[in-house]
Length: 363
Figure 1 (tube, one colour):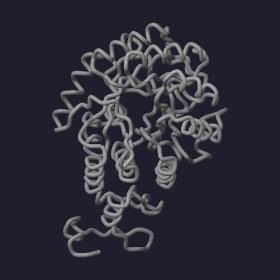
Figure 2 (cartoon, one colour):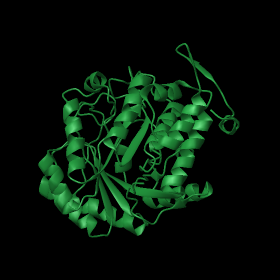
Figure 3 (spheres, rainbow, N blue to C red):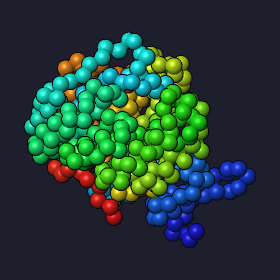
Figure 4 (spheres, rainbow, N blue to C red):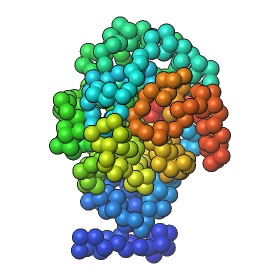
């Protein structure tokens, strides 16, 4: 390493596994090559001496590759009915404390119409996994939303390839399906009755069908290791995901993981920053779960590699009933208030709200 790099990064050394390793040199490598080994990722996840350098590098890469525009995606949580029993999720089938709801197609289209009037260029339709909405229902909803001139992301879980094709033919642009963890044993323990292979099949089908694909992980799950988090990051890189969303695991009292410790804000931020360094032109949301643990969480995330925010445009009591985890922010606000609030926060950190659809531009 030459003297210029040493001065630039305030040369620091970290002792790990009996070897003297330069954490700042690894950050420099990631910023310039967008490639790291698993061992290098693990080192940076464990290292607490150079976290600000990591976040600053991610912010520089964000600025270089995706610019200072922040893309807003209006989130419509249109049903909390779910047939799955994921151990960490408040919407799980066996949670009898949830008041279940589903919106009619006309209500969903109305919420999307209002989102368009607030200036959103993209809406995200998110629900629990259920069979309430058939293929024809979904195609009707998709076509009507697309007629508003909006980009459309779906987040409705595992479906057959033919269903994904039908949604795509109706006009859907993006699909969000988080892997949550790439540790197969942990995945299957947390997702009873579900198949890790089928999750991968879904992501593969979506990519082959031409969707922009989004995935992501929970940080701080019980029995999760930094090694498995490194595998998650490398999986996103290998998949070449267009959007990667992540956040800390927050225990829900109505789930089997109620008494677990939960994830931390800083480790979640480290994972997010590393994803930005390895996938420099991907879209990365500053998630609401970040702000549940830190009141400035989304703005900190935007200054550490993120470039997307997903304000809730669902109306009425449904905002409270979509209870994935406790402490969810903004559940008592109106969509109009959320739009104004987030715009003020974004401009307050020197960034601008994008007026574009925010498709990934590969560089």
